[in-house]
Image 1 (cartoon, rainbow, N blue to C red):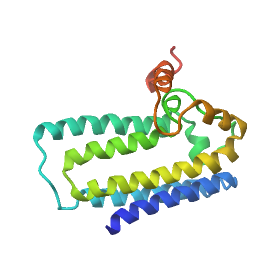
Image 2: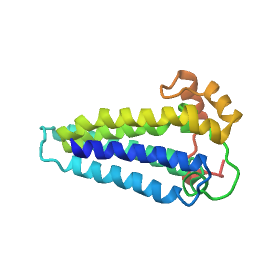
Image 3: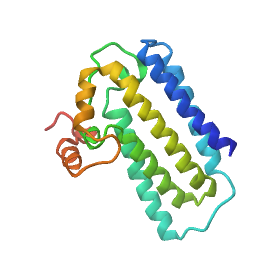
Image 4: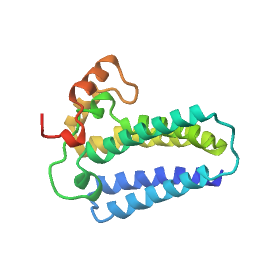
Length: 195
């Protein structure tokens, strides 16, 4: 259970990252981000390595592995490729704008969806009872994080353009219209600029 709490501490560190970003503390952002993800990854690996396991058929393991790869790829795409990396995470100068296309047309925080679905799929791969317990707890912490981002930090960072984005795109649950908009505006990273 201690490692589940350690993973939760990673989400609290991400709040510190958002606070540093809102204050313009550019030199603080990279080490805080590295620390936050370091805490979470250490907790994740430790939880996955826990010997308390349940039996999973080979077919479910293969399906879990496939979907784990799909959802992890979408997580990386949404958080690292679809939004400007250097401005978002490093603090480089440049215009900050709301991304409202692709997975960010689906919901305002697509990383939460991919995070949850990746972990649920990965539970089938490893059969870890502790990971099965951790998934709802970490997802809950993730939802708390994005709720605070949505109501406080992003409004300060993006202002009226984020308010307009909030009115047009659902928070976490896709709608038929947001699904259509996501499909219409989705770009594969290797095809960007070729349309």
